[in-house]
Amino acid sequence: MEVEKKPVTVSSNNQVRVQAVLVGCNNYPNPKHRLRGSHNDVYKMRNTLINRFRYDPARIVVMVDKPGSEKMPTAANIKKELRDMVGKAQSGDRLLFLFSGHGLCYKPKDRKHAIVACDNNLITHLDLRCEVNRLPENATLTVLANSCCSGGLIDKEPVQVGAPAYQALLIDDDDDDQTVMVNNDVDDYIPRMITYESYLAQLSAETGMNDPDIGVHLVRLFGSDASIMFRLPINEHPKALKADQRILLSGPEPQKYSWGDVDEKGAPCGAFTKTVVKILDKHAGSITNRHLVMRARAILEKRVPKKYVQRPCLYCSPKNADAVFLRKPFTRAEIGEASASASASASALDVIDQESEELA
Image (cartoon, rainbow, N blue to C red; front, side):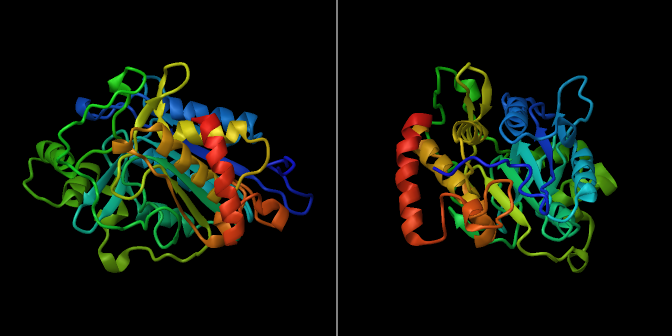
């Protein structure tokens, strides 16, 4: 196993500054859409960043939708914090954005995906693209999305583990048995997706408009705080200007559910966040983005009932896939245990199979 290295600094010449925005949404306006574990996902990741990766707490922004929260995770506030984080970034910095909450396929025919903020406003891939385009040279934004339909949040990056971001619709809405129990508490084991029909009905009730275009309702309700996907004509949408600066760890495959779960103390949480945190906390050495997602897939495939299997995905360049999680891929030593070669990938899978038994 590779000797543990300091995640926040690599040498006097190549300092890695790290910042994070951690978002958890539980209390959505529609009581039927409310979750229970998103806040715990944020707290778990914050503890891991501080204790495992030695993040400076002052560089971690926590946004949870509970009474008294300093920063409520509305879409406008989330975008502001992302904008501020990117604005402070320097060349080579590593930025992390965790979102735990609901996802939505807002254009089912075109398979367009978004995350849903606590005020029911959407954040789309174009909103994230705006921030990626402002990143300094050699800086990267890692998005860890624990929500349904999150595979398309960072577009233009190829799939390295899992399914392509815009594959055919796979969710089966005709399942007869939707009741699955984990730790004897069915309320915690729920999918993190709001359906297009339910979301449109709620927006229509608020606007009084009978229009199937979700964007029309969002612009009416949120004005300039609505996503630029809906506010600007297509010819004014921002283009992807920078390659190789985006890394997406998506909780489920495209068009699939991201499930809730409970931790070892019985507290509600997201299955994906719980798994990632457990891997990071137990793994003493550096771990690559590819290896982290492969381990999470192996663990969730064993732990979740087969009918509700959750398979995380990784979208980024090959170089970033084999870069150490939240680190710079300067040398082969820093690339870690997983390599781009087929033989190394096979060896990594053997390790994953053994460790998944211990972590499950």
